[in-house]
Length: 352
Image 1 (tube, rainbow, N blue to C red):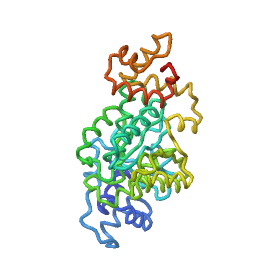
Image 2: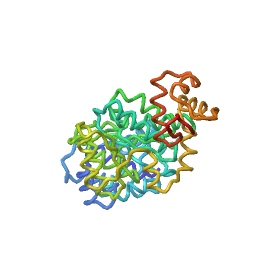
Image 3: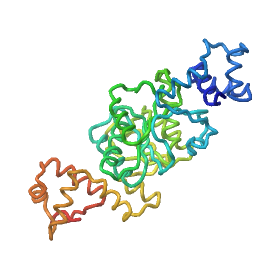
Image 4: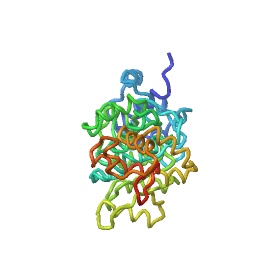
């Protein structure tokens, strides 16, 4: 039985610790991955530890339900193939088919509660409107973005969500987000990495990971980026890769928005609601309205129902009474519905 080229690549990647530069050097010396593997094993040109058996290592990967896509494979993401320093191969658990447009939603790990709500809401609305949401599964904004996308999917109106990791797919980092990773896979999404099994998420790899987060998408949305945020590296990659860059503004006195506002000054597009992004891609309000309405949360659905059943605008108190929800929940979801432009506010109350 012939050993596939991807098995030789996997063995090379394991041998060289997933190091892009060393892998590139090996590929430059030899004609193909089979040659690179035998060269590493036999030539002594590289100082390496023991070289794994390609069939055994590949079988271990497949038993973990992980597929390996090489750059030249038809299923390799087209957007990712366009970027500088394209990964030679990516490891995938789940579904990464190029069926929908993609947008990355990223920001600081030390996000405010409001920032996480904003990220979740943007992701939910964009996912409901047909976008796959890409992020890095980190604490803060990343996790909120995946969670928002999952809410749209669970409501039956979402596209997909993809998490990009900075280490091998056999171990989720951070470990506290393992449950979220399982939900992504169960929803039909994917977890992706350029690193082989067993490779830990070393600090420098998060920057390398960020080029894939932006590279997998048509555009990037930044929510809360301080001056020294990894999200700014993702924004820089987006500029280099000619991706659309959107930024949510915030209070000028809050440190979490210093990097965000700098990006806006540099030419990023300001986004105050998901429709701003949909407008940029030519998705009409009518199309987004229908998609967003389908992806409404249970609380939003109760409020919309109360408004539809009323012949006149309703005050907040009347909505609380009709929807039988707590005042805090009503006020929060009215804000979300206004952002979605599913309702409007007048001097006498709220209407559809």
